[in-house]
Amino acid sequence: MVDRFEQIYNAAPHSHPQNLFLIVYFAARPHDYVQCVFDPLTYMFREAASGFYDNVASEPRTRHSPATAIAALGRLGFSTDDSAGNFRIGFEVKEPPDFNTVADLILQALHDAFDARAGVTLLIEAPLAPRPTGRCVPVS
Picture (cartoon, helix red, strand yellow):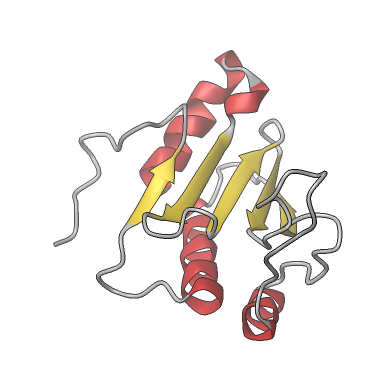
C-alpha cells in the first residue's frame, strides 16, 4: 500500500483529481472497504464503508454496520455517524508524507471493524497505481 500511495502522490500534480484515491476491499465482500482520497495533495480523507451507499438513493437502506464495527472505527478516530454517508476521518498530509501510518490505519480498520484476518484476500483499486512497482516485495 505504501508503494501505491507514493505512486498516487507523485502522479497527482499531472492527474485528474477524481483519480486521487486508493480503495482496499475484500474479494469476497466488495461492499466492505476502506478508502483514502487525496484532496488534492495537502489533505487526505479516509472512509470506511457503512452500508449507506450499498443501495441507490431511491431505495431504502438495507445494511447497517454492527455496533462492534462502529465502536472499533471510533477508537481509530473515524466518525461514528453513518446517517448521511460513510465513517470518515481526515488529516493534513505533511511533507514528506507518512504513508506507513496511513497504510497501518487502513489495515487496522479492516482488521478491527471488518474482521480481516490472515488468509483473507484483499484487493486494491487505485487508478494511478494499478500495481506495485518492483520495489514492493510480496510477503508469502
